[in-house]
Image (cartoon, rainbow, N blue to C red; front, side):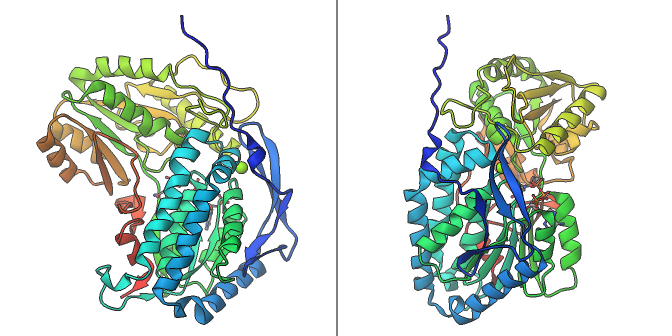
Length: 477
Ligand code: NAP
Ligand code: MG
């Protein structure tokens, strides 16, 4: 007999969501000039959470001008150790308000509180602490004796890790002496707006950080703005291409963190139970809304049956439901549009002849939900093996030799991450060396650390975030 879990909800009472939010420009919340607003919803129940300002051309102008003025008059003139004090202060406030940030992130995004509490928010604080430490040591970053900030950075981020992507963008930019205008994703603006309050609380000089909410068009206005010196984008390869075109031929510097279709390779000598945990973490963490998700499982033929049996047993234990329940493993899909994309690619998987399997699992009636799913009998030509699904859907392929595994792993236009499971160190090193991926995990998956650079090959983009390498994107040398 199995005991049922009792509900263990985290209280939302700690967060105070305002009915309406302005744009954060020059240290203050201001109304959008043309008065346009949009709604953000809780994807777990489709309830409207707040109305958020939509920044138009003149709002983006004002934000860029505020960032420029703050850059010229204050931020670039401050010694690194003074900038560091602000970043340390922000990092400490993030730790103090960690629970509030985690709850808000789960409400606006749909991700399980266990993840926002134990992964997203601690990594956000760690990122600010890490780059705070660099602010007064830039001449030692390996970029020459006198690296200089670039100026105003225009930064656009996606909805899958709203606050973490903000930290990846803002912390190195500020440490290096730049000021920023950041546009969060339309479906997840609330944690960025709470971060704006944290900037006020930290007494950050006005204009150093500006947050302009809005849809894709606001992002376009920002990256195309003449007053921006540096563009940093995380999102889809499709939009990345548009941005690369619009920035081409200008003086702007550009980094792109785009999509992925990572191979998670399991050799016959791998510890099966650990590999199963790694596969589950690789594709079901954050509902699979992860650019570096291990969305293609490559398993050695001789252990495929044993591994798939163990994986299905494990998947049957995943708890799908209320993101605020501390026992939830898989939360809500972020939006109706994303749910539709996952559904349609999964239907294509079936129609192309792959076998679909999900554990029995009851999904809530309201909100956007998709059961953890695997496809077996997938061939390299199938669209579910080639395209990023960005949901809790795993495509399983098999291989016989290490050379075949490498061949298949690299057979993708992307190159963001990969995983290798094997008992044998020499095999791990030999295979890792031949994988065209920015990050290769060995006997683990989806491990992040601010000291470690992250970024892609090929259509996964260019430039690195994190570590000493992440400073390079924000410094002239
Ligand atoms: P997306 O559609 O490209 O959106 C990303 C951001 O760009 C959003 O803020 C979006 O605004 C904005 N945007 C849309 N059109 C734009 C335009 N023409 N000009 C400027 N900005 C524009 O991507 P998504 O679907 O939100 O995010 C999922 C993608 O991000 C996946 O492909 C994933 O792999 C990738 N990702 C990559 C990394 C990485 O580090 N490599 C990390 C996380 C996610 P709205 O959302 O308001 O439309
Ligand atoms: Mg939302």
